[in-house]
Amino acid sequence: QLQLAESGGGLVQAGGSLRLSCAATGRSFSIYRMGWFRQAPGKEREFVAAIKWSGGSIFYADSVKGRFTISRDNGQNTVYLQTNDLKPEDTAVYYCAARRFAYSGYASINDYDYWGQGTQVTVSS
Image 1 (cartoon, rainbow, N blue to C red):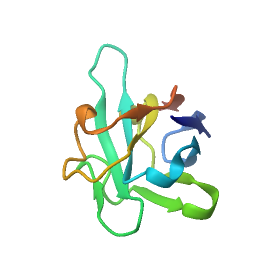
Image 2: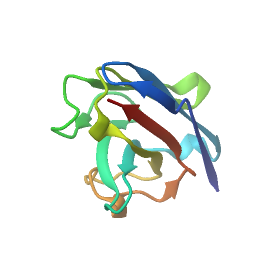
Image 3: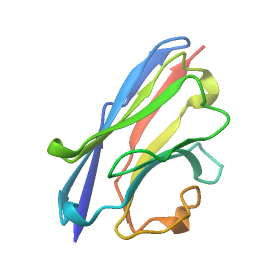
């Protein structure tokens, strides 16, 4: 089993920044890819960013390119999402997800096996 725990969310003014963290515990040695998704009230969960655990292969949604950066610390079994220049439309619950074995997909919720509980990000205008 693999457990994921997000942290770092909060309330921030437009233009501000937050760094979200996702710590993986359990069978973290088998992680192939980790991703960040978000879900705003009344909307479907959407892809934000993904990173291959062994390095390289970073992907972003068009809506966050140039503002968000995904990174990982394999030694700490943690993936980060640095969010800059936040906008009110970035308000959502942010979830991290993990894929245990090699697979080409990265942007669908069906591409991941494990999910965290989410952390709320609220951006005020």
